[in-house]
Image 1 (cartoon, one colour):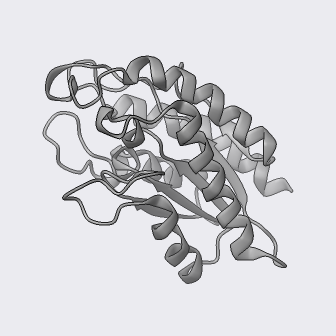
Image 2 (cartoon, rainbow, N blue to C red; image 1 turned 90 degrees about the vertical axis):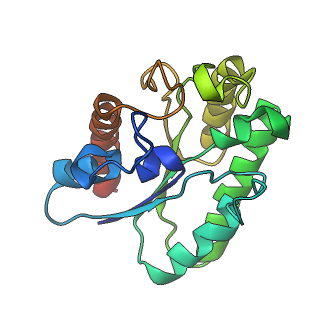
Length: 205
């Protein structure tokens, strides 16, 4: 089974301690690969600053919709895990949870349209974890803490509408309390542990 992990810096594995990339065995896609074992290929497609809606200024083209298709063209995929939405919570975008959820639905529909007459991969939606409005991210993510909670509700509704699996990270996975956005190693492991049974269940169907 081939699993595509498509997300932002928390899929890429940005460390909240020094901003560098965590080694494979400490970031959740790498841990997931270890937990699933042989017979599974985990394809890492995390990109810092990737959004669902906007292309962040000065960061190039990071829109999820535009960057997902090349992965689908190159790889045979059985499962697509989407872990996006946190960057869309930035205050400068002024997006509501509903706005971001609609963009998620566009991404889901784009995946389904790509495969049209072929078998559509199982899609797993991960809602963003909570955001701690602290430190250098305090102004960047002003108001994001409450909005992330709303986003988990909207993402679940979108997943239900499109018969996707859903993992609600808001109450389960916590970013670094001092840094505010990126996941500590313990949270990466918890996320991989939560995803493993969902993927194994998908393999049955």
